[in-house]
Length: 140
Ligand code: THU
Image (tube, rainbow, N blue to C red; front, top):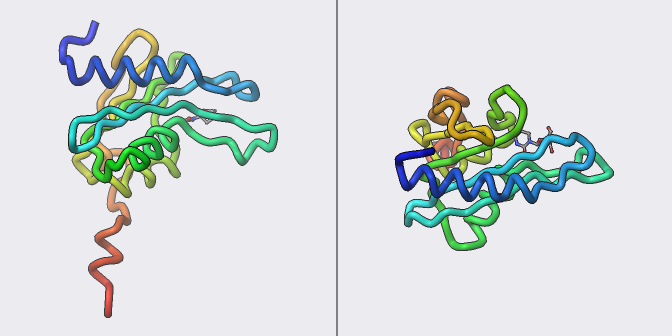
């Protein structure tokens, strides 16, 4: 049971998406949900492929859904996977989150039973490179 309704909505969306994951090769289903700065929730799951490297992560799907809906800023991310470990975003997905978030963006890791641990993007991707780095150097 998650008391915070905002967090509960994020968890419900990620968990529902995880149950729809297409992961026949790894057998590891992942769901992700993101909240944009207007408060809307977008979600995605991992979609694997017989050509293994072509598979996509749940976070990529959720961010893609946010962008397609017009969202441009992340206010929170929740990722849920099975097993006993923490399903923290892979390196590439940390950078995907960085594009639309910042060091303070909450990245909440859950399992089927509920929230397991909370990070910020700054914890997971310190001293990151983002859009501002390009803007700072323009014309230099
Ligand atoms: N995966 C995700 O979708 N997100 C993560 O944060 C970690 C890993 C997926 C990729 C692949 O389909 C499966 O989990 C096993 O790595």
